[in-house]
Length: 126
Image (tube, rainbow, N blue to C red; front, top):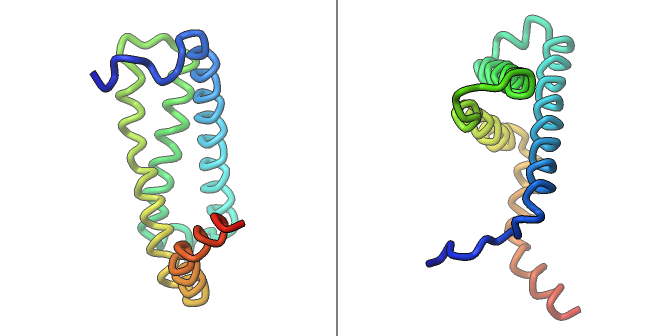
């Protein structure tokens, strides 16, 4: 009964599907360019970090998915390809571990997290 009504009207579904497809394409291009720029700048140092292999695999998988998805009609649903993108979650986890390496950034993140409660009440009073 919770899902008895659609949160998005059927008339707006094609628009939302287009927004999702454009966003998917944008982030795929962004992540592929990110990996390529890091490979050009770091050269051999790029291959010394294990997390870069995950980034490269996710970028290649995303690029192949977008290429196949928009070039060919597949008999399998595209959800199977999107499951392969769980590696992007590994990117987010990598960024969290990277903040622990940078001391000043970690301090700033802790200060922001600690002040969220006070900031919320300050906005409510305004």
